[in-house]
Image 1 (cartoon, rainbow, N blue to C red):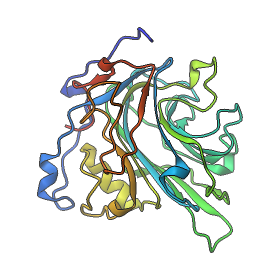
Image 2: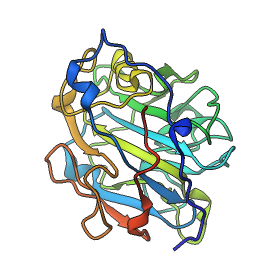
Image 3: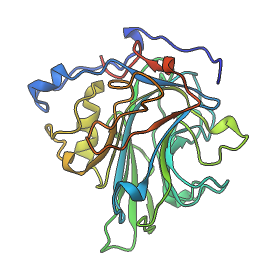
Image 4: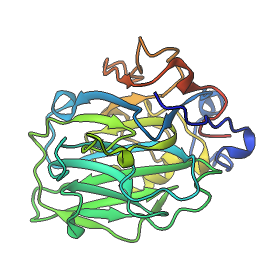
Length: 279
């Protein structure tokens, strides 16, 4: 168990922003988000079910989460989330990780193949503000190639990747806060806060990525709201602290599908009720 200092941010550390009332419904104003999960950056992570147990995937899916880093400049290969091999090659799944100190990469297949990942624009204020990321694998099986996109705070990253990978047989577990090659190398672990993780078996549109960011205010993804119309394709939604009070019970799935996640090498105090995404 790490002895890293736990960040306890007040309102100044939360994501800024106003609600676009033209795109949301009144119930959004009452959406309760009062906790997040904090990870040490050394050995703590959250692990859930395998991708193939969630759905029969073909060539499309999307992931979304909120994060606030705990250091000013993350080093390369620190992971936010992934479902990938435990071998050093990281070659048969997907991942969201730092490409360098200010950019995120979303890859499909092999992490080091430049054509198979999308890279975000530079992200500022990493250790003082919450940010939102969406990774989209948009598979059109009538074409020879499929696109890989990443959105940060509603903005499409400058680099869009392509691949022909079929992920039907992807049997790796979904996890938050670590990379596949964990072994004795702790540089792949995340250090900071995670909140509101979600996964769909459909490619979210750009309008949906913008809607989910919602100017920095999370909302209930289990129902359609404004330009967000993919709630019926939502496979799992870990609120990361809202209904989670201890490591024994794990992280609950807000979709009702029962995809509970396990907090590994963690303690009850890692459920942080003082720092969370949104105003």
